[in-house]
Length: 219
Image (cartoon, rainbow, N blue to C red; front, side):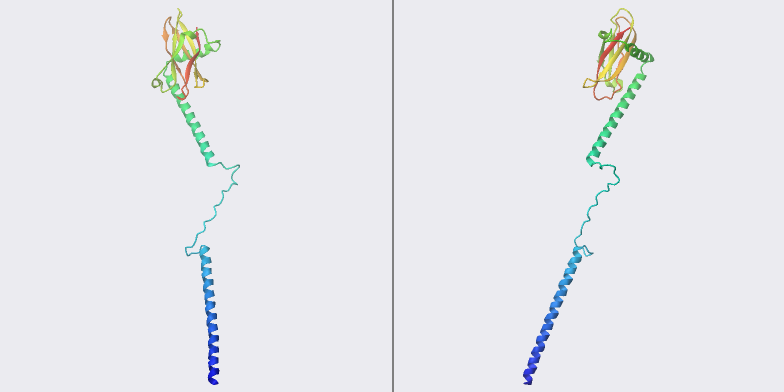
């Protein structure tokens, strides 16, 4: 009897001990799972252990300092290009005008006085004037006139008396528009003589301009 009860007690103790061992094993496993989950959570949140890095969201530009819509890069580039082109055109025009003044300054004072007189004489001339048939134009190599657009004004005195001449030369662009007018005079031209003063444009070398005789007066 005693042996059987002892055996039962031992079985009971082993059974209870087995349940305790199983309970302890289950608890340890749960702790391990929770610990693993916590580690994964910290890694996903970008901890110090080299996990996934989350890029910050880009901050939109502050617009409170603008009075209107900020210009796009394309429009800014276009504006810069237009401004640059205008500056280049202005510089070219200034350079051409300066070279023309320099060349004209090398001409004799008598020729400059004749040009000014021609301007006055032609102010009241109607039509093309009485000497249009005696005046023609011919080209000049640019190297001879500081790379300017210019023409020889060929004035022929077809009369039998010494005379003065006043000529108006218009420079037209490729569209036929008059963009500049110059006045050229010649004094004391003898009968049958032909003289060749200059008509010099102050416009840039491009576009190419076409000079033409607008008026010519003999007096």
